[in-house]
Picture 1 (cartoon, rainbow, N blue to C red):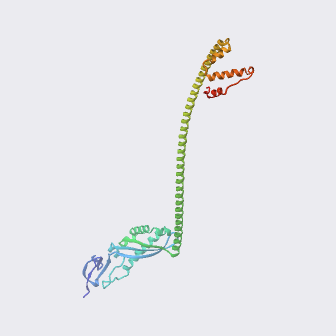
Picture 2: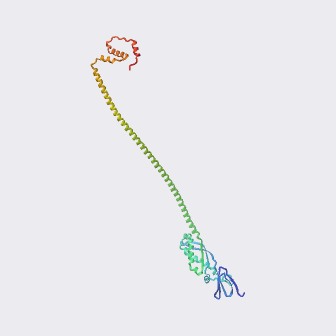
Length: 340
């Protein structure tokens, strides 16, 4: 009515009231009455805005790559942004008079694309796929420090890359290369496992051989010890036998001396007996044999006397013509005890 209207801004909307080219009031969440024909209202939203983006770029090795991400920003200096872009409200105080509020996010994405392209031109496709975090860090730092953000008076809250994808042909080539590399690594793992098994088997065989060698060495040491013990026993036996032989030799020498001494004694006894017999025979040399015979017959038994008589008869058999011997005499002789 009569052009007088009421305006109430949201708490996260910065509202500026211009009247006759001058700022009458400004702030967030303010409310007031104003005269529509002579008043211009500028509403700058200060809430954070999340804008997704998809960029198609080329890497240093001339490979196409698609980057999908999202940026979150908010207006930090609303008066600065209002001076550069048109955030003026229409006569209904609801819609904007221009499309600039819808273009701000496109400017931010364009700046991100410029910075992203500068970084991707330094990387190969493989590096770009493997270093998304480093890429985000550098682009965000360059975006925060850029003159574009300062002029617009906005603040970058977050920048994230959700996906980095090459074109399908490159992806298949990379997958094939990675697949071949994985197969090669699998073959190398199998080779290492087999080689490890062979090494383990060789180690086991070496340990078994070492054990057998150690056992044989112990057996050899035992045999050598047994041989040494047998040798020591043989040496002791030889010493004992040698001592026995030496004892026997000494005994034989003593026996030899004893026999020699006994022989000498016997010889001396024989010489003494021979001397005695010689002396006796010398004494009986001049005696009549018959007398000697008679002396010899003295003390004989009857049988011995008869035998001596028969011997005298036999000696004088040539002088005897006939000799009669009674059977009774022979029987008596046979009954007599034998002569010892």
